[in-house]
Length: 193
Image (cartoon, rainbow, N blue to C red):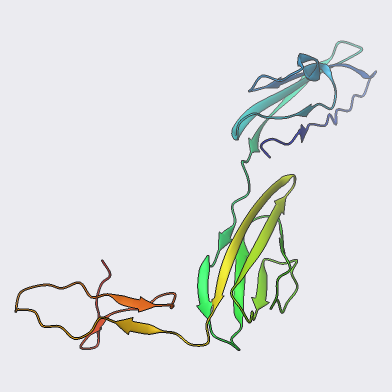
């Protein structure tokens, strides 16, 4: 994870003698340089991305071998939420869903009805509540939130009656606490602009 040390571990075995020399090569500069001469360096990468890494070892009999791998350093694991803001009316319940790699935990908030240490929780808040979720993948941590607004009823009002000439257009305005709504004309949903 970006900003956290990445532990590299030498698992070399040798049939004759013992390993006496290590040389690590990283695709980015490493400070201090002495890290490249140790069997198990901890390296902090300064950028996210895919990086070529190579380790070369030598045993006391002069036998040399190497291994190369590409490692991925992530900025933070992405969290996919089923929505960020929604509205419910009591006594409704609502499933909140966080998807991604790693483990999830939701910050305790009122109205939580299920286990908070999972990606999916069931909630039934009595007032508008922000549910915060934390995702951990190794040393990488991401945080996000979902706002659940609570209303006794959905309110919808539109402008009063008006008259226009044939061929003219008008902007219709609706005021609502709803998460979404649609305009209909003779049973056909009109596109949003």
